[in-house]
Amino acid sequence: AQSVTQPDIHITVSEGASLELRCNYSYGATPYLFWYVQSPGQGLQLLLKYFSGDTLVQGIKGFEAEFKRSQSSFNLRKPSVHWSDAAEYFCAVGNTDKLIFGTGTRLQVFP
Amino acid sequence: GAGVSQSPRYKVAKRGQDVALRCDPISGHVSLFWYQQALGQGPEFLTYFQNEAQLDKSGLPSDRFFAERPEGSVSTLKIQRTQQEDSAVYLCASSLLGGEGDEQFFGPGTRLTVL
Image: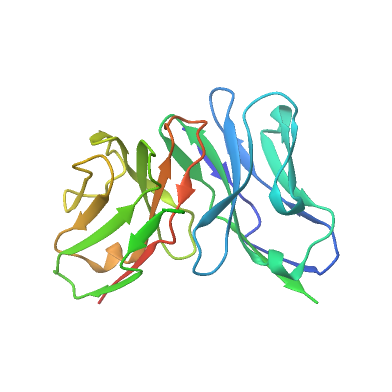
């Protein structure tokens, strides 16, 4: 069955530090992969997506993610975190007509 | 409109009451999705429409849940005889065409609390 695992429930970083959020997926074919961000009271906003081609994808707000087929991973990275990046981050895999989400990683940023 | 809108933003219901949640998708978007997000969890798929046709309702948890999109635009998710376990945020999303690669645009959600 298709699934997404985000092993880190909560991550705390200092402003300006680098960030990596982990995502592992289980999917039978070449996956469509997404990262969404959810701020309190806001809807989910797409950060980036991977369909095919270059395995390093660039997104909005300075985020990037790397698809590694051998590790079934799609980790999200940012070289320097800003206080406004504090939010909940969800990895998702596209499965025909729906998205399958992970349980999310809550990012806290300290000044 | 500029984005997906949902109403009401907050709904409190007594157990056993019926509720109706509304979603206005982005104009021109063919596909519409409903997800349920329990506290501390990721969104879980409920149902999917392409225009007015409900193509997938495999995620609806029980026959108390019903969704419709009669004119292929606005959609309503109805929950009959609400139970405490129905308490969650209900998210609506729309996409231009649908399909596993198409970006889904999400609304702010309706937070349902069943007392």
